[in-house]
Length: 154
Image (cartoon, rainbow, N blue to C red; front, side, top):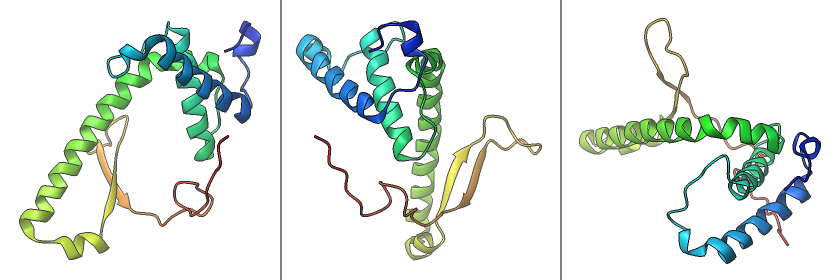
């Protein structure tokens, strides 16, 4: 973790973030192993912020999203966690609803060719819609998750 306010306000290198991720996971297992599965996130816990900073920035790098400083991560973390949980719950319900529709209607073949992605708008459209759909995009060859590239972590 950063030792100074100035250090916490700069975006760290991917190597430093990977090292922080490994060190934080090791520390959690060593000192709080009995809490794994019940460990509660709090933005005031330096170990939690280190883990979230490292994990989120590594993921951001994978998807070519601008990485953030530890300072920014800590300031955003308090409101993002509930928002992510709410959005995941809404989308999970939509996925289950659509799966039931496909199974009930026997539309597996059509669903495979006409699948769409769903997303939630922060604010409703003029027509009051918050759940939106759009056509699925093909795999991105620059994306580590979509392509056949492998990454070796030492």
